[in-house]
Structures are given as C-alpha cells and as structure tokens.
Length: 477
Image 1 (cartoon, rainbow, N blue to C red):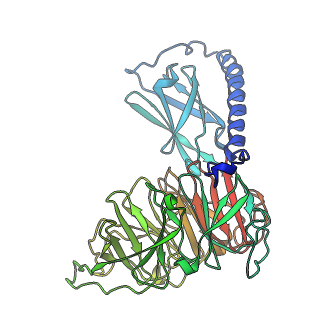
Image 2 (tube, rainbow, N blue to C red):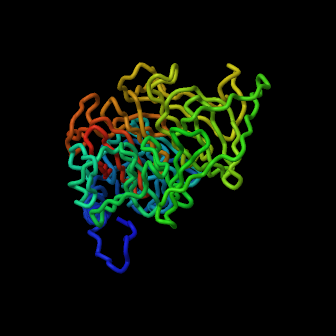
Image 3 (cartoon, one colour):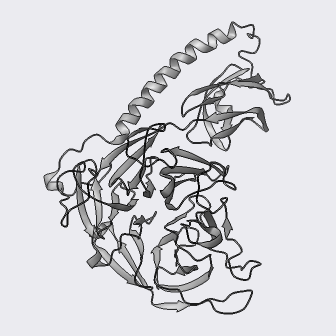
C-alpha cells in the first residue's frame, strides 16, 4: 500500500504492497507469452502459409478477417486473430475488444497475437485497425471476469460500547457502512457509531479521524476530491452543513455551511424551486465546471460555488433515498445515481443526470437530462443490457478510470459491474440472493448486505460488507 506512515520517527517498514503479487504474476505471464510466441509462430508458418510471413501491409488492398480463437477468456489471455494483409509490424496494428485497445504482441501478416485487455465488457466485438482501415469479426468474444475477494479488516463480531481499534485489522470489531479512498491509498470507513476510521493495511492499524461529535454522520460516504484528496461529505440532520477532512490537517473534520441560497427557476413554469429539506449525503466535485454538487432526498440538485459557498438549485430529480452518487470519470458532467427502494418510478434503479444542464423536461418537473437507465423497479436480479437489468436496493457506487461502474447491490448480496461504454451489466462477484460470508473466487465468494464500494487507482475494489461486519477487497486479474 502507498499509505503514508503515521510517524516518520517511528517508521516501520511496511509489508509488501498488494501490487507486489500482481507484478510477479505479470512477469510470469510475460515470460509465458514470450515462450508461446516462439513456439506458435514457427508452427504457424509451417502450415502452408509461408507466403504471408514477412509481408508488409498493403494500404491499397483491404484487410480480410476470417476467424479468431479462443472465443472466450480472461484478462491477459492470448487470442489469435486470423486474416490477410495485416503486415508484420505490431506497432502499426490496433486490436480492439469493444472500445478497449488490446496489446498486440506479434503478427505474421495473416495472424495476430493479442492479449485480452482488462474489463472490455462481457460480450465483445473484436476489430482490427491498420492505417485507415478498420474491420470487425462477425463472431463475438466472451470476456470472463477473474475476480477474487479477501477480507482485510473485521472479525465479524458486533463491537462493544467502546471498541478497541488497536488490536490489528483482523481482530477489530466494527459495523462498516460506507467507504472511501484517497490518492495515497488511505482507506476510510464510516461506522454505525458515527466514527470514521482510517485503515492502514501496510501497518495493520486503524485510526479514528472523525466522530459524530465533530459533525460526521455514518450515512454520508467519505468521497475524496479527485484533485486534492480532501474527503467531502454532506449531512443527514442539517440542510446547509457539509463536513470536509483535509489530509494536510490530519483529516480533522471541518464544517462548512452554505452562506446564501439561489432557489433557481423552473424554465417550464417560471416558478422558483422549493427549498430542500435536511438530508443530503454527498458532496462531489464536478471537474467540468469546478463546482460542488449535492442532491437532497427531496430531489433538488444543488450547485455550490467552492469559493463563495453560495448555492443554486439547478433543478429537480425524482425524490427518494439515493445512497450512491458518483461523477463519471470521462463524461465529467454526468452524475450517476443509485436509488434505493421507495422512490416511486425510479426505485431500485440506476439513473444519471447532466449537472451542467438546467433545462426542464416535458413533464415540467424533472431535468431534461435526467435518465432512468435500468429496467423494472420491483427489486430483483437480472444481468444483461442495462435497459432491462434489475437491482435490489443498490447502495454505494464507484467508477474506475475506464468508466466501469461498480454497484454494491445490497439485497442481491453481490457486486455488480456496469460497462458504461457498452451499457451491459454483469454480476462480478457474489452469488445473487444468497447471503453469507466466504472469501474466494467469483464462484465461491459470499456477501451480506454490501453497502459501500470504492475503487483505487490500480483497480482494486474495496467493499464495506455491512452484514458480515467486515471490509473486503476484490482483486481483478
């Protein structure tokens, strides 16, 4: 882990970072691939295709695609793509699994060796691009998620009135609710007793950095500002209050308050919006305009100027509880929302809205950019296209850098992944509707009411497993 040490004068050499194992695996994969390249391509040229070997790509002739194998696989597995007029310079060849570019290792002119990229989507269109030409194979490639879960904190027991957090991560007793992580890989966990813990996995330690007496509430996810790593949260009991925790001051909670309200105006009715109630769990930075945004349970979407702390009601979203909010990493003005149950026609749904567009829709109430993306709202489990996928009380949501959205699907007892390029949903790990506790692979692991979820810069996923009273780590290989 890249966690900063708490005291430089008493520095203890950290245990190896999670990446060490991954790097070792990558080295083994590279060595394996090198051997396979040496073996495969001489054999290939002995199959009566020597005439293609050594030829350069002819831009005046079309690329011809015939077949590829295997037709399914996991990250970093080899795929052989057959055809004609590829040329033999791998640097001039691009291979895509959906929109995700793959590493091209070798080409004979009629066969390309490429590696499956990370999380391109469960059903992939394979395409080859050389110069101005791009062609797609007729068949699909099925991507298999290779995920494993391990427990990093919590012994599964309910905490006493005064829990001891100094006994080591595997022994501490906690009820984790939501979770966050900053650029330095510090993990923050909100607890049901309104404490906020900072976990140092390298040092096997936990430290309280915020309490309810300081204004922190456990239902407010500690979301790190992507530019400053300041933890930002909303509030459950005061409309104008926000809680910020700056790493430069040791994450000591500091309260900020909205100084002035602009109620905004509905462009369809020319009437001012109603003032919101108290509950607003989040405070998110929108990198496209530099403002903070929050959403109140009454439905108001609010923009806050971080310099003046003046607030403007941008418009209305459907009212109801939404524990999960996240800004899209590439479509930076898109706010994605995970509604829980009891939210009318958006119950148990994944939605999105453009925070920079205040246009009102045809119903004269909701923002025109607001979209309900998922299927039926009755609370169930269904994978496939997002438009028909179903969730059951989704809680925390978090994007990785590629735009994959991870969902803590609370009552389905599993972790879901939405590829926002292909708009496909897959159960990444956990057995749907089967509650339990078990570490292991996709086929074995069990969760119990996963609440919070966050993804670090290396693609590791951390889950606050509320029902199991543990913090879990998911690694995708």
